[in-house]
Image (cartoon, rainbow, N blue to C red; front, side):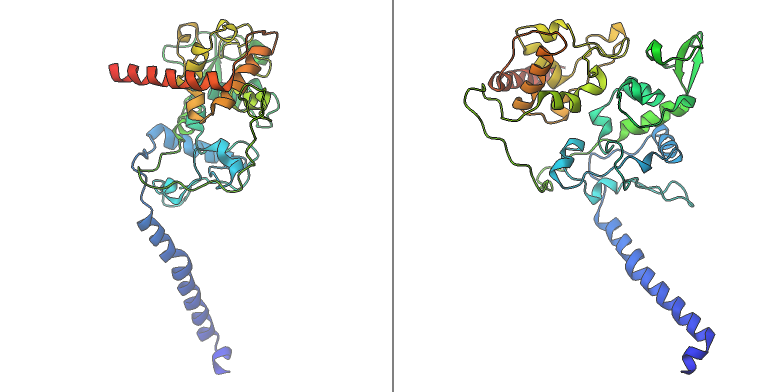
Length: 343
C-alpha cells in the first residue's frame, strides 16, 4: 500500500509503463516496417514543385474527401491495377520536423481515390479546368471550386499557362484565365500520383469479393451480358468528352459527329483508345492518354464503350463486336511496339 500512497513512485511507474508501451507498440514496429518495406524499384521521388503541391493539397483539406489507398476488394479495381501495399508508401518522408504528412491515405472517399490519378488523368489541361470549377467537367460534382488559384489577364505574358474555361463559366471580367504557381504546383503533385508496377516475379495481391462473371449469350456478337456501355463511358470517358458527347470547346474535342467515331472502320478509334492521340494539339486540344491500356479495359468493355459512342447523341454508325475489337487491339499493339522500336 505504501507504493500507492507515494505519488512520486506512482507517477514514475506510470511514466515507465507508458514509455515501455510506446517503444513496443509504436517505435519498434515502425522501425521494423521501415527496414522491411523499401521503395519499389520504379518509384520516383517527388520533384520540388510536387512537394510544394503536396503542402497545398494538405493546406486545402483535400485529404478529407480523397483517399490514396486501393483496397483489396474488387470494387476498388477502378482506382488502380492492384491493391496498395506498404512499399507504395515507403518513399514518403516527413514534411519537416514538426509535421508528419508522409502519407495521405485518407479515411473518407467522398471524391475519387487518387492513388493513380496521374496515370488515369495525366492531362494538365483537365486538372486546371477541374480546379477552376469542377462543374465544368463533372456536372454533378460536389467538390468546391478554387478560383483564387487563378488570375484573369487581358494579355497573358509569355510562359503563362492559359486555362481553357468555357465562356459561360467566366465572370464578367474580360481576359484569359491564367494558372498561378500554386495551381501548377498542386497539379504537379496530382500528376505525380502513379501506382508503380511490382518487380518481376513478385506476386500482386488479389482483389477479393470478386463480382460474378457475366456469361456469354448467343446472338449478342460475343458481347458479355449485362455490360453497360453508358456506365463504362461515364467511368472512362465522360470527364473529358462530357455526358452529351460534345466535349468542351478549346479543351476536349467532341465525339458527337466525330469522323473517327462515325467511321465504319474502327481501327483508328481502337488505336486512339489503346495508344492515346496527340493529332489535334495544334488546335489547342491536349494529348489524349491511352485510356484502354491505362484502365486495363477488356475487348468486351471497349466494344461496349464504342457502341455507346457510335449510337448516341445523334450518331448512327456501324456497331462493333468484341471479337473484332480483340483482333484490332492485337493489331494496334503490334503497330505501337514497332513504332517504339523504330525510334
